[in-house]
Length: 612
Image 1: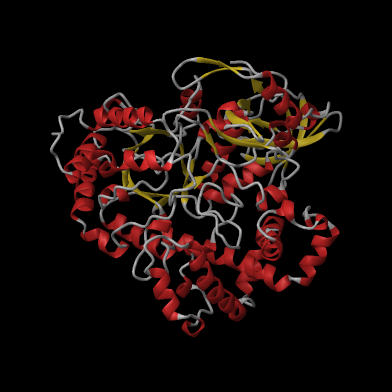
Image 2: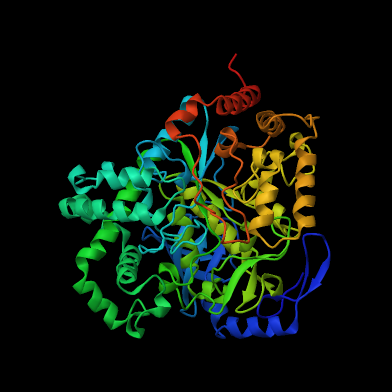
């Protein structure tokens, strides 16, 4: 479907293959938000290309990242350096030149791994929330059993204030991480005398993850540890290497502590990062700003240590909080007065509003794609893998005007070829496998574009009509996701009952959706009187028929948890706060987990050529 001059699609096809037409009022509202690009944008916007291609600029002079100089006319040489360069045309115009390999890095053999909601993976050593020490334990267990990866929920930072944002998919930033995930005892300068042991025990014993209580105890202990280790020369060197982005984030964090988590409500003099009052604040609050920078240093070190040599796929949310650090830093690039979401589909028949402001496509190009590049790079860093949430957002996003419902939005198109090639470049540099979550309303051409870049598709048993044996190799295969029922919850019916209570979805939609999923679960003849454990095994017997490069097992299914992590479309339910009922140190002894591991091991052994 074509788009207008603002990138808005008037006509589109919904998830049931029915044509839809956007209301005129919606189009006019979105046009006003998007605005008009400057007339010379096409002369200044970045050129994204690949070796062996002609960027169509005639004779140009290129200064590469490493400082080398090249003069190129027409086609780039096949061995032209990959990376982010500057070019100057014969007329003297300067612009960014991004040279991509065009394909993501891919592992050479099939592997299996666990999907982990890290906050839920608590142990006897963690303080009420799963942390990077627990991730280290999960990694060691996975490696012992022959697994090849872990897929974790977004670990990005939220505002350092109460109440803490619970959703990992509405962070304050996509570049930096959440200090709630630090294993406090492992930071330099930690002293047990700084900790109220009784309060830590109380927080650790809470039936749900209480982020506010966790941050209250962790924040005090971390601040004391920082006071003892801030002068470490290694920290100073690391901080300097991170540059302006870290300083900006740390400044926003300190400002949020003083003025609240939404920069729109701050004194007007502090609402822009380059304001004189912000510079004065930095000079006055260097100690607190340094603390927030130090937290990121500790997170970087602990994540790298927790990951080891195992691939850890980190999750890139589709957007950020409208009042957060990234929206403060890039407020001129983000659309104001709209949010992104999804039209009605199999996940939610009422549509979804995710609350994140979208990047304006032409402003993103004007910013030389820097917000996108930094977000991808920051999420990949230190772990070797990336899952792109709602990867269709690289092609088009569902924009919802302020005060409108989720059904009253429209699709706005993005420069997908450029964005996909940037992902390929970052994947190549980090040797990171990339998975695109292509669920929901997927327009024609998206699967082909992802496959051409080596971005793995996302195949979910609950959504697929085909037998897993017929799924493509270039995919991650899973039974369910954080937004869908667990096997036990589906089988017992408890998930449907909870969905009816938590959302306004019609009962017929909920009941009908459950019947559709049960058809997939029972395609091999699972008996109606089977136990939840039998149902879990039946689901994963199917899954392990898939030839997909990555086979993903769910920790919730491994412990027969009936509650899914999140029910889309509601904030009343305890989304993102449900811990696993089995502590991390006991997972290896779980009979159900052992059965799933054995299924995966047999599949990988059968697929891996044995030496003669």
